[in-house]
Amino acid sequence: MNFNCVFPTCNFKKNDIEEEQFLKHLKENHNDEMIEISKKENMSINAVEMITISNSKVFINSG
Ligand SMILES: [Zn+2]
Image (tube, protein in one colour):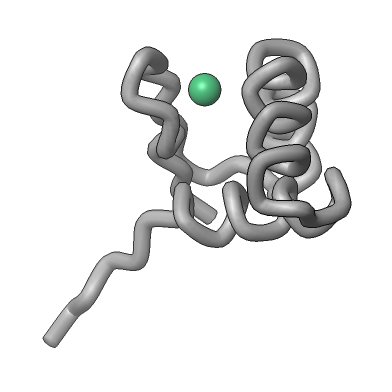
């Protein structure tokens, strides 16, 4: 799986990593942001993590 971190202040970009590794990046670098989003959007932190992961996935379209 290829990931390009969705947070605009972050330039984390990695190919061929597991979702778990990207989640680790989120927890280590974006915990505060994710907590803020969860408060603001009234969502659980797990939901925010899932959405962030899904928005950061890079799908290669081979056409
Ligand atoms: Zn990031």
